[in-house]
Amino acid sequence: MISNCFAVREFLPLAVDGGLEAEQQREVEIHLESCRGCAAELEALRRTVAALSAVESVPPPEMLARLVSQHLALGSKSGAPYVPPWRPELFRVGWMPQAFALFVILAAILAMLFMLTQL
Image 1 (tube, rainbow, N blue to C red):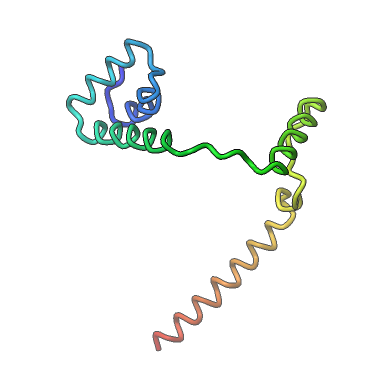
Image 2 (cartoon, rainbow, N blue to C red):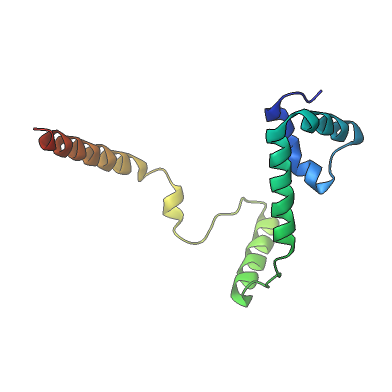
């Protein structure tokens, strides 16, 4: 039984797309009859879907389409997860301690500057 707003809002995208089972759809409708917030959320989703449906489809640039096709083909052949070819070092954890230390230093400097302005 779908009874609270949190649970109902999880089902709203499916309700817009017609992807709910009959019983789920009825439970959502019952909730919407008594809940203005969830009804407004559903209406906002419907307006968003309608607006996006009106947008003209634009094909991707040829180079992008080729790169995506190549990476999909490589990933499906090897079975390995996709790793972007650009700046893979950003996805490693090695830089995180240095970034955290820099953050702490900057926070300390800002705190000292704030204290100086309070004098």
